[in-house]
Amino acid sequence: MRVKRFTGKTMQEAVERLRQEFGRDAVILHTKQKRGGIFGLFGKPVYEIIGAVDPHAAKKEPDLTRPSEPIVQAPPPQKRPLQTKRELIFPEEMDGIFQDLLKTGIPKELARTLIADVLRGLPEAEWTNVQRIWDELGAHIAREIATVEPWSLEEGQAKIAVLIGPTGVGKTTTIAKIAANFALVAHKKVGVITTDTFRIAAVDQLRTYADIIGIPLEVAFSPKELHESIAKMKDRDLILIDTAGRSPSNQLHINELRSYFNDIDVEVHLVISATTKEDDVPKIVDVFGEMPVNRVIITKLDETSSYGIILHVVKLANAPISFITTGQGVPDDIEVADGHHIAKLILGDYL
Ligand SMILES: Nc1nc2c(ncn2[C@@H]2O[C@H](COP(=O)(O)OP(=O)(O)O)[C@@H](O)[C@H]2O)c(=O)[nH]1
Ligand SMILES: [Mg+2]
Image (tube, rainbow, N blue to C red; front, side, top):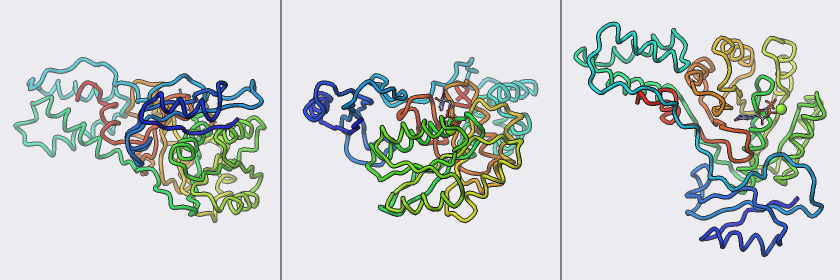
């Protein structure tokens, strides 16, 4: 499989270039009209397609071949009844705001603190202004959801990031999305390493993606091999390391995970699904917090309609969000996290 990015001032021009180079059998993996690059970092507005041609054809590949879809937006906020502006509230209506906050998935204690913080910051005359309180809650939540911009990679500096987290949250898929975007769109030299040697299928999953994207993959069976793999990739701009899903109730697993990264200068991204149950969040954050967690990635926003858990995770993990993911599609269903956007998702129509 050969994969390449083609651009043009019009979509037709980009497709024409694809056809010229790859011929009639080429498929289009991805199209978009972009302004300033996928993460808003690069270049002028252009039409872009990522095309592929398989000289051997008919090999089964993961779902990179979805028809041309625009770069994916996070799901629209859930419809909720809008409270009319400047409605007067009495104590029981304050309770109404509290109950509504709980419906967003924000845990009780946190909801209480949020309301108290907001009221403290408002003159008492405004305490009866429901819309004002929602607006302040939105602004407050947006401030609390710390986020970071994607790496601005220096050539050949080999930024190393590892994704850790429970089984099935989307670590491998997210690595493929990040790798594809940085390699194919931003033209960075990316490499992937997996330490998930537990199951052959897990290695194959990442290998397939690496082959399609056209980047090197190393498999590390031990901490020593991980060092060797990293050394082999020292010409890369970005090295992404995949790990096996760990059960947060298995301390042994977590210790083994730690032993891989003890003396590596690595940015640790904790991956948590937006579908995680509220009660499970503290345990996950606690156990994976045995690693120094630098970033949080929230996956599967498309699978829920209450996003309050995101605030819960960020506060407990005490680390900013790097990316959010919004579907199974590689490489499209990933976004750079934005506090205001997430606050809007959480509060929906109340804002
Ligand atoms: N709906 C949805 N599914 C996702 C998302 N990210 C990953 N998945 C799916 O979750 C499943 C497990 O993903 P995988 O990357 O293997 O998880 P890992 O065990 O953490 O490596 C796969 O079926 C993925 O397609 C997402 O953002 N939304
Ligand atoms: Mg995996």
